[in-house]
Amino acid sequence: MESLITQFYEAFQRLDGDAMAALYHDDIEFHDPAFGDLKGEQARNMWRMLCQSQQGKDFKVIFSNVQADGETGSAHWEAFYYFGKAQKKVHNSIEASFKFKDGKIIRHKDHFNLHKWSQQAMGLSGMMIGWTPFFRSKLRERTRSMLRKFEEKRGT
Image (cartoon, rainbow, N blue to C red; front, top):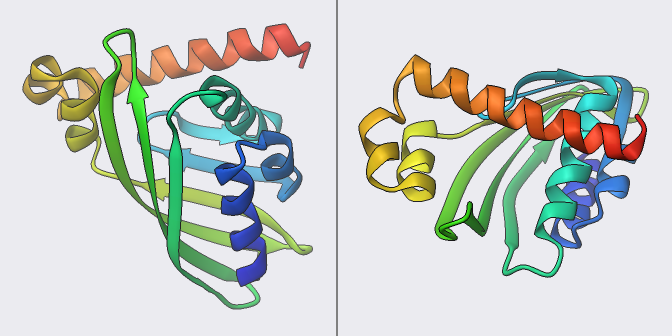
């Protein structure tokens, strides 16, 4: 299953959201601090959207410490990109955990420090409120709205 995780992040490095989505089980459940809980096609579309949004931009993903057995796995990955209209430089460090079923990823959880991310992505305002439940709620509203618009354009 280590090869499955490796394939996932290699596809991300190529910004190939369809290849990433193909590694997810039909019943995938995903969670991270920015999107919250996503299931099925929403989780697959999140990666498609993120990959599409970074096409032609200064974006880099590195991954390491890939470990897996037949049922679970983990990896460390880092993303380097520019965020928002102000194009703030972000270096996000993420710990990922996985569960597998039928040779695919059925559970994927990414954990990162949302307050640290918000400071990089939003500057002073992120530093001031990035740790609050209010901020997390507003960020999830924004990311979910972006995902809905992406899905409407795709017709999914």
